[in-house]
Length: 292
Ligand SMILES: Cc1cc2nc3c(=O)[nH]c(=O)nc-3n(C[C@H](O)[C@H](O)[C@H](O)COP(=O)(O)OP(=O)(O)OC[C@H]3O[C@@H](n4cnc5c(N)ncnc54)[C@H](O)[C@@H]3O)c2cc1C
Image (cartoon, rainbow, N blue to C red):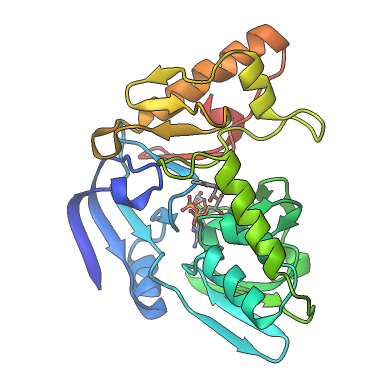
C-alpha cells in the first residue's frame, strides 16, 4: 500500500495548491482501499481533486486518494468502472466502441467517484443519465444501490462523502450511436472557451438559472483579472479562478477570491452566487453557500 507522510496535497488537486497532509493514502487495489476505510472510517476521499479546494490553513490529518483505482470491464450491455477511472477514459472508450450517451463527459477532468457525487455533466449530458447501480462503502460494509435509490440534481447528488465512499459504478451501454464527431466538437469547444492550460477547479459558481449564467454576471461586474495572491479570476472565462503560480500557491486564497467576487455580484445585481466547488479542511467538507 502506498502511504505518504507529511507530504503536500497540492498534486492531489487540479488547482495544484494544498497543505501538508500527515497521512496520504493511495490505494492500488480495492482490497487496500477497504482496509484503509476499515481503519479510518471517516477519512476524506478524493478522486482527482478537480472540484475541491484542499485547505492549507487548516489541512486534513489524513486523506485517501482513489485515483489509482482505475479499471473498466464490459459485459453484455453493462460497463462497470472502478471509482478512480477518469471520465475522459470512460467516454473515449465508449465512443470508440459505439456506445452512445457519454461523449460530452470526455472533457471533464474528474473520476467516476467525484463525478457521481457532483453529478458532473457537460452540454446537456450527465454522469447519472445512463447509470444503473453504484457500489459504496457505508457504515463498515459494501452496499449496492440501484438507480432508484439515488438522487441527482444540478451539480449535486444524494451521496454524502462524509459517510459514503463510492467504489464502483455500472452504466447502461445498450444505446448504439457514433458520437466521434460530437466528442471532437465538445473537446474543441471547451479548449476554445476555457483556460484549460492553467490549474483550476472548473466553474467556480453554479449558474443561478437556465437563463442567467454566472460568467455573464461576473463579467458584467468587471471581475475578470481580479487577483488575490496567485489566484486570479480568469481573463478567458470569468467563471474560472486560475492558479498562476502552481506549487507556491495558497489554496485558501481561492475561497477568499470567490467570496469577494460573489459579494460584488450580490451588491451590484442582488443575485447570490452559489459555489460549485467544494472545500475540504480539518473541520470537514463544505459545499455551496456555506463556503461563502
Ligand atoms: C478544467 C476543468 C473543467 C471542468 N469542466 C467540468 C464540466 O464541464 N462539468 C462538470 O460537471 N464539472 C467540470 N469540472 C469540475 C470537476 O472536474 C468535476 O466536478 C469532476 O466530476 C470532479 O471529479 P473529481 O474526481 O476530481 O472529484 P474530487 O474533486 O476529487 O471530489 C469531488 C467531491 O466528491 C467526493 N468524492 C470523490 N471521490 C469520491 C468517492 N470515491 N467516494 C465518495 N466521495 C468522493 C470528494 O470528497 C468531493 O466532495 C471541471 C474542472 C476543471 C478543472
